[in-house]
Amino acid sequence: MKTAIFFALALGLAAPAFASDAAKDASDKVADTKDTVKDKLHTDSGMEKAGRKTDKAARDVKRSARNTKDDAKDKVHDATK
Image (cartoon, rainbow, N blue to C red; front, side, top):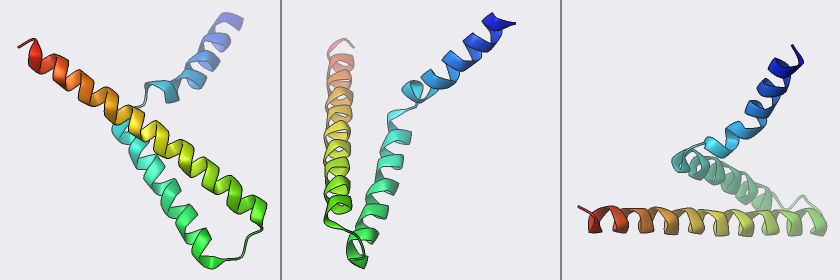
């Protein structure tokens, strides 16, 4: 019983790691849109805004890394045809 619970918990925590790049990009786009709306409202403190800017920059870097990885995969695939 404990093994089954442990396995289910491990699988649940690891599931986001198996999400597709398109799903991750869509999630990032939603978060970016939400942050843009908050910026346009001008109702937040400087710390909240700085945190959002940092999070957006991190999402941009991750998105760029995923795109670079996908481009490299495509080039390898084309080269091995």
